[in-house]
Length: 546
Image (cartoon, rainbow, N blue to C red):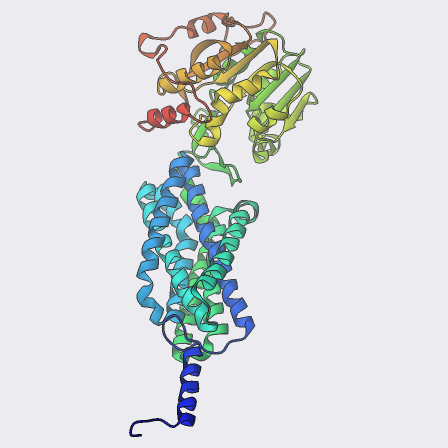
């Protein structure tokens, strides 16, 4: 019959068609080359490394913002929101690149390694010299997010080129490895990268790993499918990226010192970044020869040696006007409050709870600070505990006659929990009916809502309170709350009859300090709780203008 096909030919044609239909092709429509199982493993290893690097970039940006700007909740929210949005845009933008996925992926990884690796250094410089941290952070987060978003479509295309899979199965494999990599990156950042390299160098090291991940894909997996000229060009590009990152690594310490010094008036004599904070000590000598040593945590002044005695005498001695055999100090890792406590011979034991071991180590070993605190941390009556104060209180069993609370201002969520009703409830478990508690409470002048919110928080937890304010020239006006548990009568503001001779405080000064001017008297504010950290809201709003 005209136009008919013989059965044998039809069978042969059908078999050929079936073979063509079963032939593996990439998701871009191109035939997939034959690869060994090792190639698939290497590609999934690249997925793992890329995911780990991407999460480290995200964590590095949030940590840097928390150190430099404070308000960790806002910094984290902005970085994550911008990056996730940019990742979506990047995924869409990567669609045209799927036609040449090998070269496109290598370029994306090279640019991501360069931008991500240099991100912390660039933002630190923007903060120190240009005072444009937030706009620069948003731009960097956007670019990093775009590049991370472009990775997944390209990697999916490459994975399908190695071995054709049903879409759901391929997505499952890809995201399983991606999420495992994110887990490892998230754990490595605080546990390995920060302690070993610090923020600047840690980001540069991760950038180098990111660049190498792109090289693995190009050189070891798809070299037979990529033109020699393209391979050499990509390798030259990645080598240049590694060269830039290596050069930045070599000069990172000098750049960090220069940028950091730009932010401080006086010469820096000690600086370190810990998993918890950035510690900076400056020291200058005036024409009269009087040294002024200053301690900064995350850029915030903690004390000046010229007038710190005003602050620490006010913080400690009114709290020790009652029983004081067993004293608890929370915060105060510099040892200056401890110095004042140890001036009483009848103090038998002092427990100092300080989160950051680097701070207590500095107080012991850094000569100028050790001289200022009189070697207080080495006194045999002192036990130093490096722990989170909130969690430590949950397990504390002994009681204390007097408690001195010397935490930094509650300008982060982590610090705000130490100014919460729940915290003072926990504190009540280690107090006796005659115990006295002193809380540093910020500035009644610069941040009155913060000050009165702390007062109301302590009262809401069941304490009676008395407030007073003093003048510390390096700080300005500063306030304290003296509290007593299980009573409705405010604790008397006085010094002990056997108090040592003080340089600033006496009963007359203390009596006058309890009088607040009309414009700074008690305000109607909310107490602060874990679920409603009102004090964080107040402190951020009030201090932003100063």
